[in-house]
Image (cartoon, rainbow, N blue to C red; front, side, top):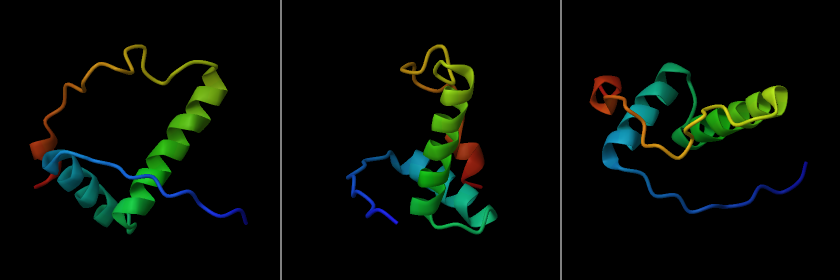
Amino acid sequence: MAAKKQVPLRLSEQLYNAIAAWAEADFRSVNGQIEYLLTECVKQRRKNGKYVGEEIDAPPDIDVEEFGK
């Protein structure tokens, strides 16, 4: 297997907590969850031939506080 690249990533505390809670529910580490989510987005893009969201750069309109509970 090819060596994995290390990428520094800064997340808001709210987003990190939401991903951490999701990762725990899926029995993954936070790093594993982020890698899983990115992999799924890339697969979806290849499948559709376009980005998953039409407004990919728009900030998400979600309440991340809800996921941290």
